[in-house]
Amino acid sequence: MNQRQEISVNGRTYRPATAPVVVACIDGCEYDYITEAVAAGVAPWFASVLETGTARRGDAVVPTFTNPNNLSIVTGVPPSVHGICGNFFYDREADAEVMMNDPRYLRCGTVLAAFAAAGARVAVVTAKDKLRALLGHGLDGICFSAERADQVTLAGNGIADATGLAGMPVPSVYSAALSEFVFAAGAALMDRERPDLMYLSTTDYVQHKEAPGTPAANAFYAMIDRYMARLQAAGAVIGLTADHGMNAKFDAAGNPDVVYLQDVLDARLGAGLARVILPITDPYVVHHGALGSFATVYLSPSVSATAAAALVASLPGIDLALQRDDACARFELPPDRMGDLVVVSSRHVVIGTSVSRHDLSGLDAPLRSHGGISEQQVPLLVNRRLQGVPADARLRNFDIFDLLLNHTT
Image (cartoon, rainbow, N blue to C red):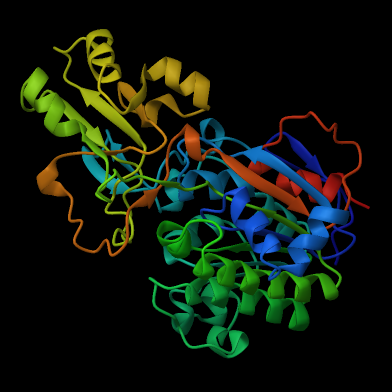
């Protein structure tokens, strides 16, 4: 590694890596998945970290969705700074509802790009391609997705043969194998390239279907455990966290427990006076039906935001209905990219737009989803003891690079 100096990124200073540093973001990983797998005796690496490493609980950013949290992790700052506040948002300038996958929406640089610019070898492997361009923005290094591993090029991704590297064909995007591809490729990259920094980001296909402690969940975490042990044997300092947790979101009959907020507002305020945006929306809706526990609402100028907030807050299953400034201050969000209201549902309830706009035919198991405060707690595991971090300090998932680079020896 040529990088020898401390690096400052977005107001934080990071020491150079003295050993390979690996950050793994396990999509949808609440802490219980890990402890249940350990209790089942299928996760010896996790068991060793719980016993001799560092095992803390931290907070993800709200909304607890994939894009805002992955970008917080790789920038070290909340969405109010980096600008990515959902998977999907309403672009006022374009007057269009759009995916938030384009790097033009990113308002700051990443730790990964800064280290690469300083001479470090950096590699990124993500499960879904929706994150690749954002995670790889400005990065001179290896960056590719499992989803499109068969389309990589040396010029575009820093690698010529990702499927050969992983020793796997491209899996279905709706499979546990997509995440395994990420780890297989990451472990092979460690053996072949020995990057100074590596970021691995999975998909929550399993967590959307399986509760902690189920056989399928335990098998998934046993797979992760094997690859983490392999990376550790190669000398890596490993930090594991998540973008969000996951909760059951169904009623006693097993049906999704949904507040269809657009239908409610159309009926109570009048059609066309409110627009409900669901930031969970992405191209991969089969396992969640675009139903999550966070929404933002754009109101016509003729509608009182105070009155609308009171109306929404009174609905069964709704925990919070905040006006924009209050919500952005509380959740560290960019005000220019949020609606007039921010709405958060309760632990086992999700928010939809209109009944007619959600195709739930792809749900083949009772709905599990995320997005709200109830999915904010995530694991922060490090395979070494941390130095200089108070036991009662509030930690965020986006502290993980600081913890690994500045607080381990």
